[in-house]
Image (cartoon, rainbow, N blue to C red; front, side, top):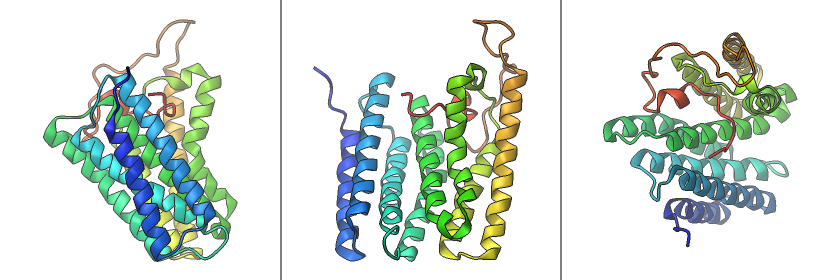
Amino acid sequence: MRTVRTGPLVGLLSQVVILAALAGTVGLGGAGWLAGVGYAVLSCAALTRGMRRAGTERLGPADRVTLTRSVLVGAVTALAADAIGRPAPTGLLVTLTAVALLLDAVDGKVARRTGTASELGARFDMEVDSFLLLVLSVHVAPYAGMWVLAIGGMRYAFVVAGWALPWMRGTLPPRHWRKVVAATQGIVLTAAALLPGTPTTLLIVVALALLVESFGRDVLWLWRHRPLRRGSRPTLPAQPHPETTSARPPALAGSRGDGWVL
């Protein structure tokens, strides 16, 4: 008999409650409900699977913060999907996004102070970040240009490339700049949602350039350290230091990830 893991279920129920609150205040159409509930169900299933693989029955303190962020991202997803057919409550969408971005710094501090950093928490945090960028890119693209989708889709393209090129699935060394670039994408896309126009579009161009540079550097590193023969493992630098702003294990703190392989 499998153990029921309450953390993901709490997240699922919380998501439904927030969606109901949105429906009762700003209004939420069918598209919003479908996107929000779909995100909640998939997140619950993925997190449950991840906890089962990690052999844990409870989420740690930092993971609960990340779960809160995930619920906020689900709300942003619902509002963005609902905006396809009608004007979106931009102020609310931006506020929820801003809180989710701020909490991204909180979960790391909580993990450090409580000593509860884990590979599961690192992957959970990374997936929430990645999906938020994807949603924001889709929301901003209609008035900034379809090219903005490159920001939200770049990590997923990296993952797909890893399926065809095994050397791209190697573990990257920790790099603080990677975290800075990721945070920049969220801030710039949030600003673009609030104040669309030429100035913010230029900021998006700069943010995309930074992202291309960051991913390009990682791809080059993986290429240079690819296995020289079949069955060998990539060569890693001796004892890489963890990023100063991350409480995650070094291996995952420096990884682009391979999707929800939990």
